[in-house]
Picture (cartoon, rainbow, N blue to C red):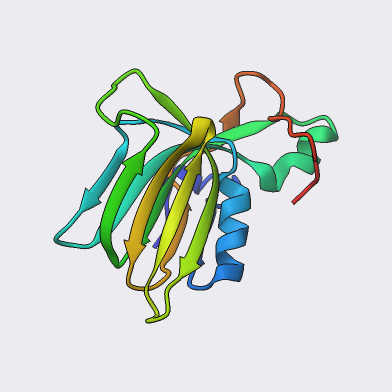
Length: 161
Protein backbone atom coordinates (compact mmCIF):
# COMPACT_ATOMS: atom_id res chain seq x y z
CA UNK A 1 0.00 0.00 0.00
CA UNK A 2 1.44 3.40 -0.91
CA UNK A 3 1.16 6.57 1.10
CA UNK A 4 0.28 9.59 -1.09
CA UNK A 5 2.03 11.94 1.31
CA UNK A 6 5.37 10.35 0.46
CA UNK A 7 5.04 9.41 -3.23
CA UNK A 8 7.18 12.31 -4.50
CA UNK A 9 10.42 10.58 -3.55
CA UNK A 10 10.64 12.05 -0.07
CA UNK A 11 11.97 9.90 2.73
CA UNK A 12 9.58 7.15 3.83
CA UNK A 13 7.83 7.62 7.17
CA UNK A 14 9.34 5.91 10.19
CA UNK A 15 7.48 2.80 11.39
CA UNK A 16 8.86 0.77 14.30
CA UNK A 17 7.52 -2.02 16.49
CA UNK A 18 8.89 -2.95 19.94
CA UNK A 19 8.18 -6.40 21.31
CA UNK A 20 11.07 -6.56 23.82
CA UNK A 21 13.11 -4.25 26.03
CA UNK A 22 15.90 -3.79 23.48
CA UNK A 23 13.44 -2.65 20.81
CA UNK A 24 11.80 -0.34 23.34
CA UNK A 25 15.14 1.38 23.99
CA UNK A 26 15.29 2.41 20.32
CA UNK A 27 11.77 3.83 20.38
CA UNK A 28 12.47 5.54 23.71
CA UNK A 29 15.52 7.29 22.22
CA UNK A 30 13.50 8.45 19.20
CA UNK A 31 10.62 9.90 21.26
CA UNK A 32 12.90 11.73 23.68
CA UNK A 33 11.89 15.42 23.86
CA UNK A 34 8.57 14.82 22.13
CA UNK A 35 5.85 17.25 23.10
CA UNK A 36 2.09 16.84 23.15
CA UNK A 37 -1.01 18.45 24.66
CA UNK A 38 -2.25 16.66 27.78
CA UNK A 39 -5.56 16.11 25.98
CA UNK A 40 -3.94 14.17 23.05
CA UNK A 41 -3.90 10.76 24.71
CA UNK A 42 -6.58 8.10 24.59
CA UNK A 43 -7.08 4.76 26.28
CA UNK A 44 -9.60 2.47 24.60
CA UNK A 45 -10.54 -0.02 27.34
CA UNK A 46 -12.46 -2.30 24.99
CA UNK A 47 -9.61 -2.60 22.46
CA UNK A 48 -6.98 -2.43 25.25
CA UNK A 49 -5.05 0.21 23.35
CA UNK A 50 -3.38 3.43 24.49
CA UNK A 51 -2.54 6.01 21.81
CA UNK A 52 -0.63 9.25 21.97
CA UNK A 53 -0.11 11.77 19.16
CA UNK A 54 3.30 13.38 19.65
CA UNK A 55 5.40 16.04 17.97
CA UNK A 56 8.85 14.46 17.99
CA UNK A 57 12.31 15.71 17.12
CA UNK A 58 13.88 13.63 14.32
CA UNK A 59 16.89 12.33 16.26
CA UNK A 60 17.60 9.81 13.48
CA UNK A 61 18.38 12.68 11.08
CA UNK A 62 20.42 14.88 13.40
CA UNK A 63 23.80 14.24 11.69
CA UNK A 64 22.45 15.49 8.34
CA UNK A 65 21.16 18.65 10.01
CA UNK A 66 24.54 19.29 11.62
CA UNK A 67 26.05 19.18 8.12
CA UNK A 68 23.96 22.14 6.97
CA UNK A 69 20.44 20.75 6.70
CA UNK A 70 17.45 21.80 8.78
CA UNK A 71 16.67 20.28 12.16
CA UNK A 72 13.28 18.65 11.78
CA UNK A 73 10.26 17.54 13.75
CA UNK A 74 7.44 15.24 12.70
CA UNK A 75 4.09 14.21 14.14
CA UNK A 76 4.08 10.57 15.17
CA UNK A 77 1.60 8.16 16.67
CA UNK A 78 2.74 6.10 19.64
CA UNK A 79 0.46 3.09 20.19
CA UNK A 80 0.68 0.61 23.05
CA UNK A 81 -1.38 -2.57 22.75
CA UNK A 82 -2.53 -5.14 25.32
CA UNK A 83 -3.05 -2.45 27.98
CA UNK A 84 -4.99 -3.65 31.01
CA UNK A 85 -5.03 -0.34 32.87
CA UNK A 86 -3.75 3.23 32.72
CA UNK A 87 -3.01 5.89 35.32
CA UNK A 88 -1.44 9.34 35.24
CA UNK A 89 0.35 11.33 37.91
CA UNK A 90 2.02 14.71 38.21
CA UNK A 91 -0.25 16.64 35.81
CA UNK A 92 -3.89 17.48 35.07
CA UNK A 93 -5.11 15.58 31.98
CA UNK A 94 -8.08 17.92 31.64
CA UNK A 95 -5.89 21.06 31.25
CA UNK A 96 -6.37 21.89 27.56
CA UNK A 97 -3.46 24.36 27.64
CA UNK A 98 -0.94 21.97 29.19
CA UNK A 99 1.90 20.82 26.91
CA UNK A 100 3.81 17.79 28.17
CA UNK A 101 7.35 16.70 27.27
CA UNK A 102 8.08 12.98 26.96
CA UNK A 103 11.51 12.04 28.27
CA UNK A 104 11.61 8.23 28.04
CA UNK A 105 9.75 4.92 27.97
CA UNK A 106 10.63 2.42 30.71
CA UNK A 107 9.37 -1.18 30.96
CA UNK A 108 9.30 -3.17 34.22
CA UNK A 109 8.36 -6.82 33.64
CA UNK A 110 6.35 -8.64 36.27
CA UNK A 111 6.88 -12.20 37.49
CA UNK A 112 3.90 -13.52 35.52
CA UNK A 113 4.90 -12.08 32.12
CA UNK A 114 2.83 -8.94 32.51
CA UNK A 115 4.42 -5.66 33.50
CA UNK A 116 4.11 -1.92 33.53
CA UNK A 117 5.28 0.56 30.96
CA UNK A 118 6.05 4.06 32.22
CA UNK A 119 6.00 7.09 29.95
CA UNK A 120 8.24 9.42 31.93
CA UNK A 121 7.46 13.12 31.52
CA UNK A 122 9.37 16.28 32.36
CA UNK A 123 8.37 17.83 35.67
CA UNK A 124 7.91 14.48 37.45
CA UNK A 125 4.84 13.50 35.45
CA UNK A 126 4.16 9.89 34.48
CA UNK A 127 1.74 7.84 32.45
CA UNK A 128 1.77 4.29 33.84
CA UNK A 129 0.31 1.49 31.76
CA UNK A 130 -0.28 -2.01 33.07
CA UNK A 131 0.37 -4.28 30.09
CA UNK A 132 -0.18 -7.95 29.36
CA UNK A 133 2.96 -7.94 27.20
CA UNK A 134 5.24 -5.40 25.56
CA UNK A 135 3.75 -4.28 22.22
CA UNK A 136 4.62 -0.70 21.25
CA UNK A 137 4.45 0.90 17.79
CA UNK A 138 5.80 4.26 16.62
CA UNK A 139 4.68 5.61 13.23
CA UNK A 140 5.27 8.96 11.60
CA UNK A 141 1.97 10.39 10.36
CA UNK A 142 3.10 13.64 8.71
CA UNK A 143 5.98 14.81 6.60
CA UNK A 144 8.94 16.16 8.54
CA UNK A 145 9.04 19.94 8.88
CA UNK A 146 11.72 22.39 9.97
CA UNK A 147 11.93 22.68 13.75
CA UNK A 148 10.60 26.13 14.70
CA UNK A 149 13.65 26.77 16.89
CA UNK A 150 15.93 25.68 14.00
CA UNK A 151 18.05 23.75 16.50
CA UNK A 152 18.11 20.45 18.36
CA UNK A 153 17.08 20.00 21.98
CA UNK A 154 20.16 20.12 24.23
CA UNK A 155 21.14 17.65 26.94
CA UNK A 156 24.01 17.61 29.43
CA UNK A 157 25.30 14.32 28.01
CA UNK A 158 24.66 15.16 24.37
CA UNK A 159 25.37 12.04 22.28
CA UNK A 160 24.17 10.80 18.92
CA UNK A 161 21.82 7.86 18.99
